[in-house]
Amino acid sequence: MYISRELSKTFKSALKKFPSIIITGPRQSGKTTFVKNELKGADYVSFDCPVERDFARHDPVGFLKRFKKKTVVIDEIQYVPEIIYYIKSDIEQARHKYGKWVLTGSQQFTLMHKISESLAGRVVVLELLPFCIKEAFSARRMDLEQILWYGLYPEVTLDPSKRDLWIRSYIKTYLERDVRQLMNIKDLRLFEEFV
Image 1: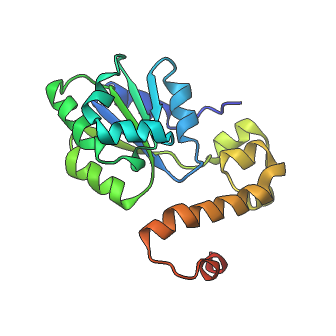
Image 2: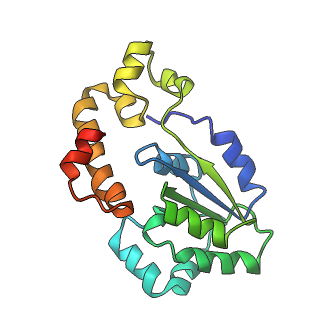
Image 3: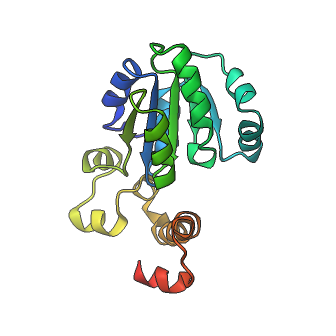
C-alpha cells in the first residue's frame, strides 16, 4: 500500500524548474517507493545492482546514453558518486531540459559534497524523512505511545508486527554500512550500546 507523501507537491514543482533533483534521507524512509510511485513510466536504474554499478563506473558515457525517456531515475547514487560529473555534462548540453535527472541517495557527507561541488545551481535537494504524523495516520490511527514505540518509518508503521526484528536489523546495517564508512569505529558492539 502506497501512502502519499507530503513532499509530492514540492517534488512535482521542482520537476518543472530544475534539470536535476536529488532526494536524500535516511535509509528506509521511502525514497525508492516515492520515486517509483511519483514517476511511473520513467527510466529507472538502481546502483544497488552490481552490474549497473560496474557499467556506470567503467563506461559512464555509455551508461547515460542508453536512457531515452524524458525523466531518468538513478536510485542509490551514493554507490557511484563519480557519475555526477557526467550528469553535469549532460545538463550543460541542455540546461533548460527540466526534470530529466532524478537521483536518490542516503544522506552521506561525501555524496552531498560532490553534488554541491558539481551540480550547484542545477539541482534541487529534497529530503524525504520517515512518515510525518499526517502520513502515518493515513495508514492507521496511532496514539502518542504507539508513535513513540513504533516510530514512523514506513515499514514498521505499515506492519507493526515487524518492529523488533526490523529495528535490530536497521541498526545493525546502519552501523555496518554507514557509520563504519564515515568513522573508524573499532568496537562496533560498544558503539551499538551507545546507540
